[in-house]
Every structure is written in structure tokens, then in C-alpha cells.
Image (cartoon, rainbow, N blue to C red; front, side, top):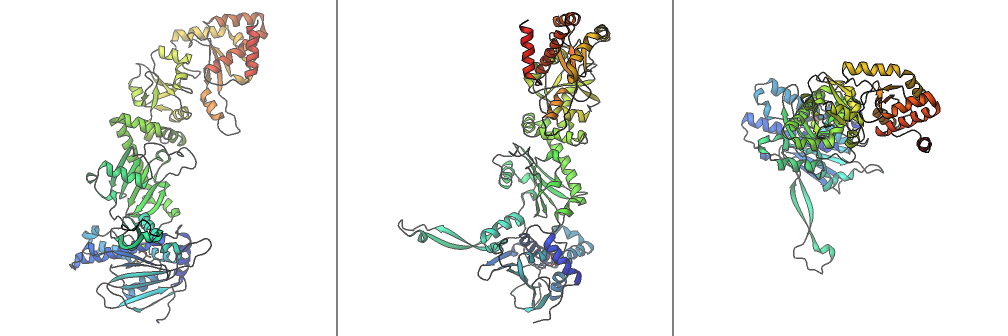
Length: 639
Ligand code: ADP
Ligand code: MG
């Protein structure tokens, strides 16, 4: 037995820190050890290319051997192996990466041009130690390629390690984990079950380039079993050598090799969706960040999409090895519906979530993905309108929230993706289309909001604006008006609510005329305002109305519709629009008001209440006091 050596002092602390903090799941150790094995084979393959050793890629494989009785799991490879010195340096010094050194040596050496051929994963020098999350003891038998002697490294964790000569056939490395004993909370023995190993390899290491093999036992129904045989005699077990990983990542293939069917079934399997995706985006990017991305736009929003429970994110791979299942930082909220994955060589495998958040590469990738998604949606909008409208139905709301929640910061990015219902033919239009169809001299984009297209269409004010030849956007989602207010304008055309107090559509002459009328009826308006108390901010005469006696509008930025939306949200602060009761001086009611003002102030107050209630109801609002309303109505009717 050789002398026990201590890990270097800082290594001890690092080891403890790492085991407890870098990895969230202990199952990760399988991924780490398999990645190391893959690296070791990459290295030998590379050496073979350069030194004409005549090895073939197909000679390499990784093998998992669980032993339930001994409670060990062995992971072996026939890669480059390690010398005694390498065992000490690579496994005895934490945060020392033989793989990183290997990569750097190639880059600075005479074979730099061949660096493309290797895609070594490791570079951090900590992954190996994750084995101690699940094992109480680890032995590493290794024989370097071309060497005669094999050595065994052995350690029980933080205490230190030993290295001694051992027997081993062939080159490569064989790592044996002596699993920890099960506790009440932790099941370590599950790592010895075929099904568990199979699913972990699928999850994390499906795209390792070398086969990961395991002898697995399957139970089959015997073909010739007699009907009346005992239940257990009907079955036979058979053991076969199984390759657990599929090896070639779909996204590494070129687009021309792939069919829509392949993309679709990949999506359905991987992201558990019954429906095919609406569209896929497959891109490879080189430059400030090198990555491949395979993104999907689902057809329908998941049932919890618009709830707090929904978790956005893309799968993140480093060189085909899964690092994170839902990396939220890769997707902005306004595109949170996108599913898919990103694979980048620029990211390190052993990186914690916290570190990843601050990773510069990740930020660059996220920015570039945002652009890619936007362009794809724009393309869909111009090339396949029907599909885009389907998309919009599912996720349009999220895009509008994106503009609102970003305080307009995402305006440039998102404004051309917006669709609103056109008042003309009740079909969805883009802002661009609206602006193109604008009347000569029109300098605002008009909109009206309400509960439904039908309700908006019936608004008196909408009718008169349309009569003047202006198109109106019909806003029916709660967020719509907030979204447009955040945007302020589109192509220098300001958004303007036809329900606002300052619609300003009259000719100079009309303006003058209504101004005069307002002046001469000043006292009447004031009396009505007084009767209505703090329900309204103003009472005015208007020439906006054709056949209706009254309407409600709002001065200032907060519309009546917005007030309703805000007050339906769970907060204790009440929003209040500056409501204006506008009266049509050409309606018979106006003469009656005039008459009451001169003869019956009490009845005038009742009329004011009733007119206000009418205007609110037309607007789709509820009235504050329905009982008082019906009493007043009865009073007038029975007079
Ligand atoms: P990393 O993979 O980030 O370099 P690890 O802690 O996972 O860090 O491994 C440390 C080093 O140990 C590797 O860089 C490599 O040099 C060596 N090593 C680990 N496993 C093997 C193996 N199966 N075959 C050969 N070398 C290995
Ligand atoms: Mg590693």
C-alpha cells in the first residue's frame, strides 16, 4: 500500500464547497464522469489522427456496470487513460483540468488547424469530484495508452487519496463508485438500477458522440409458453448489450438533411406536446458567440401559460451535454412561449445557476436569440398571414404585455408584430397597414376600447368618427390601451382614443360654434356638474354626437376603460379617470335640460343622474348605484 497523500490544503475546502454548492442534483455525477470518459476518447482519437495510430472512432465506447450486490457502479472507457503522474495531477489537485491543458496545447501547437476535430468538454477541473456526492469511496484504475503499467487512484473523499500499481487490461480508465448507504431522505442505490441509469443517460448524455453501453436485462413473454403455465414461468429474461444514447444531436445535423416531420416529432417527444409546433427555427451562429439553437413556437398556449406557475426557459447544452433544463435567462418575457434548446461550446459544463446568470456569453446568446425569434415571427407575418394570426391568437397577449411591462423599451423590437382589430372589416391589421391606409391629412392613429368588437361598434362616438372617414382600431384586451400608451406613437403618428375628451376632429368653424354654445350654457353645465358631484371632472356640450344625447369621455391619460381595468385588479388604490359628461346640444333632451334649469332644479339633478348613468351604460361600464338609478327612472316615468 502506498503512502496516503493529502489533497492540497485549498483543495480540501474546495472539494467540500463544490460538493455542496455547485451541483443542485447529485445525479449530475453520471453526466460528469461520462463527459470525462468522452473527453478521454476524444483525446486518444486526436492522437491517433496525428500519429497515424490507425484507431477508428467506432473502436471507442463507454460502459456502465452496476453491481447491486456489491453496491458499486463502474464507468469505464477505452480512452487515452492516465499515467501515475497524471492521476496525481488531474485527480489530486482540484480545479486542475487536464482537458483544458490539452485543448490549450493543441491551440498553441503545430496541429492547431486540427483543433476542430476535438470537442473536449471538460475545462474546469471539478466535475470528477461530483462522484463524492453519491459515493463514499471512489477508485480510478487507469492505464495510459501505450503504457505497460496501470495505476489505481483511490479516495474516500476529503481525507486524501492513494495511488498504487494495479492490474488492468487495455488502455483507458475504469472508475468504480462505492455508493453511499441509503438514508431516510436519500436513495443512493437507485443509481444501480438499469432504468435509472438509462433515463439519466437519456437526460444528460444522450448526445455524447461515443456509444454508452450497458448490459441490460429485459423480461419477455415466452413465445411458446403454455396457456396454463404459472404466471412467472410465462416470462423469460434475456440480457443484451444495449446502447443507451442516441449520439447524434438533431441540431448538429444540417437543415437540408432534416424534414419537417423529424423536427416535429423531436419537438413533440422532447417537449411533451400533443400538437405539432406552429414553426421551428434552426440556426447556427458563429461570431461573438458560437452556438446552435433549435427553437419551436407551439401552436397553443399551455394551460398555465398566463399564470404565475408557468416557467419559461430553454434547454442549455454545452457541447451536446445538458447543463440546464430550463434556462430562463435565455428568453425575454415577451418571447417566453418559445420552447427549444441552445448548444454552445462557449459555456462550461460545471457552472452553477448563479454564475450562469452573470455569464457574458449567455447574455450575448440571449440577445441574438431574441433577434432571431423576432425575425422569424416577422417572416411568418409577411409570408403566411393565416399562420401568424393563429400564433397571435395564442400568444399576442404576451407580446402586448412585453411592450407594457418594459415601459415601452421593447417598442422598436415588438411594434411591428402587433395586430389589432380594424373597425372597417373587423379583421386583424398591423400598425403599418393602418398607417398606410390613413386618410390624407390624418395625423393620429385612432382607437376605441371596449369589451367586444360588437360593443365598440355600437358606441355613438365610434359611429361619428367613422362617418368622417377615419379608421379606428378596436381594442378588446385589457392590456391594449396600456400598451399603446406606453408606445406613445408609431411612425410619428400619435395614438389617440376616440373616447378621449380632446378628440379634436372638428373644423375651425365647428370649434368656434361649439365654443360659443358652451359659453352661453355655462351655468347649465355647471349646475349639472354640481348635481353629479365627484363622479365627473367636467360637463360640456359637444358636436361629436349625431343621434345620441350624451356620452362619457375622459380628459388626461387615464381613460374610462383603463379605470375599469385597473380597478378590477387586486389593489387597495382606486384609479379614477377624469370623466367628462358630453351633451349633444342638438338633441331634444338639451332643450328639456334648459327648461328644468329655469324651472325645476330638483328634476334637473335627477335628469343629470340619469343621463350620466345612460352614458356609462353605453360605454360598457356599470353604474355605481343601480337601485338609486331605477328609483330615479321610475320617478321620471311616473311624472
Ligand atoms: P474537467 O473535466 O473539467 O477537466 P474533471 O474534474 O472532470 O475536470 O477532471 C479532471 C481531469 O482528470 C480531466 O481534465 C482529465 O485530465 C482527467 N480525467 C478525468 N477522467 C478521466 C478519464 N476517464 N480518462 C482520462 N482522464 C480523465
Ligand atoms: Mg470533467
